[in-house]
Length: 457
Ligand SMILES: [Zn+2]
Image (cartoon, rainbow, N blue to C red):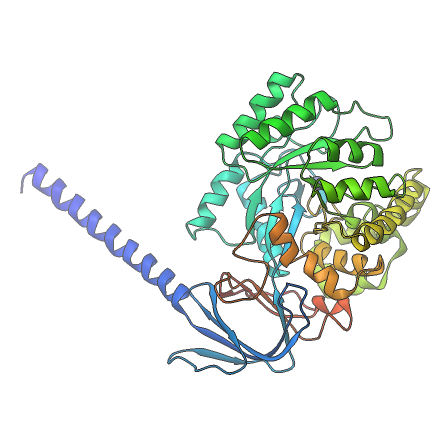
């Protein structure tokens, strides 16, 4: 045998091996996709805000909901799950979370945006029934690779949408620890427009800006810069979400055509002029109570900190920080703690006022931005905080499902209906009776797949 024929035989064998391997992978994935599952006899909260329906069955096929009905013919080969007494609702959607900013669940890090760390966080969101997240800025460009891999079915975890790096201020917000390639900080209008064009070229899903002077401690993004960002983003068919804090900034951003306010207004109670302006400009409002509450709540050792549901999400290193001697004293003696408490209370008042006036309210937590804003747990806790602010459980759930899909322009999810993605939370108890029951997770389906390793409730 000549060397060339040997080498061609070898390359044929390699090709054959690759072909077989590819065939196996394809078969495995096809099997997973084609598994047909019937969830029978549930109470259904469909994410539209409609009253719950009883004794409903859902047929899932190829990652989608094929049928929703009271009686149903069971196709041969269907896996039937008898679920009477359980409640099914859409998987949660967070319109404001972050990835790769915390390492070991416990420390902020400028070097945490790694494939390994981000993947682990995506899996934690998914395990807790948060099946879709908008990673709203401070992402490395790795995020676009991960998104692509998810589309190809090669990466598990919550489905990512992203604002890419986001646009901050030189020497100003965001004050988060991040590498230089995780954030744009344009000094001029021309740079700002160039940064937006780069986001558009990379197919970011949204543009994030920070408009906050940190109680006078930081330079603030000028209206000249953010107007340019908003204008350029809209030219590129991208919408703009703003981090803001103060009513005055929020008012100006709304007039200047921002699309989403990504935090509560919380320096003061909102006025009617602002409410009217929000409605007139059709701007979405995402409260993120977790931001303020996470600065002080753990010092008070609330009961939920004893639950495995919380502790599994927090992880041992963060738990050790909370349990360390002097933790509560340090928080309570911090001069900023009183401010955070006030901000939280004003934010709660503002949500109720804006919601009742008919402003479009979405759902987010800022989970993953700092330790204590705990991916997965934060979303369930945020629902409780919205109810504490005066929304009904149904209203809170709808912001985090059907309404958030509208906010993010995602027509394929957020509600339970034929044709939608099979992203579902199955609960042991009814969250309309007690919103805390969203934490009683029996099962999570994401893209029609049952997620293992559920958090203990
Ligand atoms: Zn954020």
